[in-house]
Image (cartoon, rainbow, N blue to C red):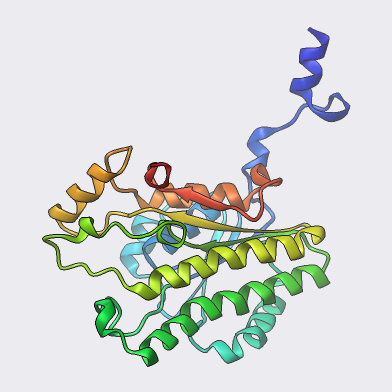
Amino acid sequence: MAEERRCLSGRNNTMIDYHKKFSLVGKTAAILGGSGLLGAEIAAAMAQAGAHTVILDVHAPSAETCSDVFGVHDGTIGYIDFDVTEVESIEDRFSALWADLGGMDVLVNSSYPRTPDWGAPVEDVRLDSWRRNVDMQLNSVFAVTRAACELMRAAKREGSIINLGSIYGVVGNDFTLYENTAITPPPAYSAIKGGVTSLGRFMASHYGRHGIRVNTLCPGGIEDGQGDPFVEQYSRRTPLWRMGRPDEVAAAALFLACDASSYITGTAFMVDGGWTAI
């Protein structure tokens, strides 16, 4: 009985407050792309956990988003205009942002900029478009992640960085899903998300000694008005027999942000209904 009590109590017989491990009270969280489908829900999750939460985006959250998603929370949510497509100036602008916020503890990269021809069939993809998308999506993730890691290291401030990847950065596409639909999976998407995942492993290894964790959150398909044929085909391919929801991705992001995941870094954290299990 005494041995069991020691195990439950943790080190030095001190009872662990597991509820507190999921709290972000006193923390600052910045959400790149925080006005988007996933970013808005992630911002709401961080704020509800008590973090001072800042949305970084080129679009301010709509009134509908503020009402439906950000309705009730314990932290505060602010908005700052931040364009990740201006890659060359990201690090300088991020350093200024860090100073304005007094530092940060959590950074989530959920921005998703893309060219107007995004989704063109692979045989029609122009090289200039490919380069632009890689620059906006992958190179911006590198610039922001490095800036955040260096600032955290210099300030001796442990933190969590979460980059949004995808199942298609880990496994290949199932093209049967797109039959009888107007959806065309962009080849750059897979290349970019695979790069984000590998970059996360590198950064986690490099900065781990400073208490900085870097993980890649990899959602499966999230239902967003794709139409019945695609939703049905996708659901049949997935062990849980449905597409995911934004709140399920946000809950995973919250876990990776807080102390509950303090020994987790360098992962491709799958939130995919079992898609990559088969």
